[in-house]
Image (cartoon, rainbow, N blue to C red):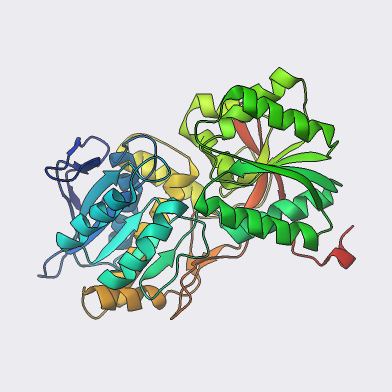
Length: 411
């Protein structure tokens, strides 16, 4: 049985989130979390912030436990010997919230002394925060897939990746013989990047986009049915969804209403299926981009994923094998490495500590995925960190890896 460092409180999931005293639409954990190594050095804890900006829910504790485990594992291995304190906040972000409130939530964490901030990360919010982060000069790690989250203090361990997702989806369509496709998604600033990348990648792989429509917030079912009927009349080989995914659960019911069942291909928005059984059912039959492989999938696997889940269950008493756990654990490990290599816990030093990470093991992705940063090179996941999977019978099933090939060399 593995012994873990002292963590007070013992887990974040049990903690209560309460309204912030002066910030609208922002909740914070009622307690701060302190993790102390077995033989700590006599120094003040490094203060780490966490910002949840998802437009639905107010979950905080469930996001923090994987980060706790990542930091504790580094302590168990004898690498991280300095205490760490975690502060967390949730803001109802874009596309349904307010940009100013997202900025205010970040300022709260920095004003409280956080030397690095981790996050969930929605593209629309990441684009709002990008200039603020670089002005504050505090390193920030996002999961947002945008390529426009750039700057000296902006780092990405992405839940997908707009350009990469577009390339994988386009190549998959070409391999399946889907030469004519219709494309949908959300009508938002972040999703405009998806649309641009997919158009470029579809052209590269010889896939023709014959019609497009992007769903605005509040679109009525009748309008969606009309759009899908128009799509059907184009006689495409497949329906492609490239977007954040907030409306992804509306398409199967709409396709049933109009009596059309085309092949359905989705970007990483398919991972909304992890949020609830209802979402999993709503996305049944779709093929999309995922980042973890379960025991039931017959393929070479990332050697860090299942052992981490086993330790997670032993440590916290519950198991949740959604990709989010792996992404957040990787953020915790990257933060630990930054603290270990930085000469001091100042934000600039931690930024430089992140930039020293090279070929760091990951828990998400395939067997050849790793993390690497460098000066001016802040998109961390490398290798086979995304692949195609289909939802069938309430579970994900591997549909294939992406093999980068020129069209001349593809079958």
